[in-house]
Length: 464
Image (cartoon, rainbow, N blue to C red; front, side, top):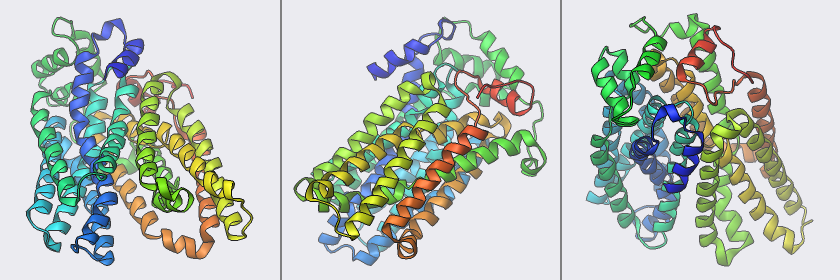
């Protein structure tokens, strides 16, 4: 927390008040992302424990893992509806409830019905979180800190994954579920201590409440009238929003196209395939250190994502995505080459051990620097306020659907293309993602949400 505050202070304008309150509020909001990350990481240590204790067969375990994704597919659109209907803050509270109920269901009984229901509910909450948390953070942040704080969503997801991996070394599946329930309860209780976003309040003509929220977020002694006026001027006076506007208005269809495509490329980057192979790579390359190395992967994700948080408002979104895409493309190509040489028995013992391990670590660094944290940040920035809920729900739905398809068809891809061909294909997708960023994605570093909205309306320029 102290290091993040130090990095934030470097970019914080003297007109934006102290960053302490803003960082604390972001921390509380990101507890939902921590819960989401823990859900992702839970299945890795829990499923072997369940099989060992006779709760699951391998076939049951497959369903248990996939139900999280099914829940998230439904949770994304529900999150978009919630943030418009109930507000951003109350949506964070709502998102914590299925997390808690899901973990309690898994603790309550070891029957398949309760376990499947619990997994689905935690997946549903995960979908809610992927919409609610990025939007909340984007709307409370100052323009100079939005990149730093917006990246914290992915940072806390990686921390949650690492926490699940680490706890899995010491606890069985029930103990892990109890820790998950405790996290969800903490997120729910803490969410009562943070304010609603000023932009949502002003959109509902609640100016007095918006000013009070700004004082809580900035400084109680700070004059926030000017920032309040800037937000009001940027709000669309058109109150009603129709879904057909996505087809009729370029200022909505362009950012939706960008957000959807960025999310598609995130899933086509091969992240699920690489993480799928993590344990098998370590077991074949460094069998004595396999479990510790898996935890090390989680630690590398956390460190690299933290570095991305500090770099986001210095290097910019575009540059990090381009660098990360090139790193990932190169390492995925090396993965493909490794499997080609392995099949032909052309690797010596040293290369067989360290080539996949080093490639994996470098790939994780690349993903964590760019294509991990930035897609959700971009989604939270580029949509106008009145369409942010609907547009975010579409983008997140697209993200989870592509994730489901890629994961489900991964074995089919291996059958058709081979292990090496599958990774070559992912490498090609990473190169395509770099070209897309160069051509279509505007740099939003240091721009207010209102400036970004004006850019898509064609009333201002944003340098690429």
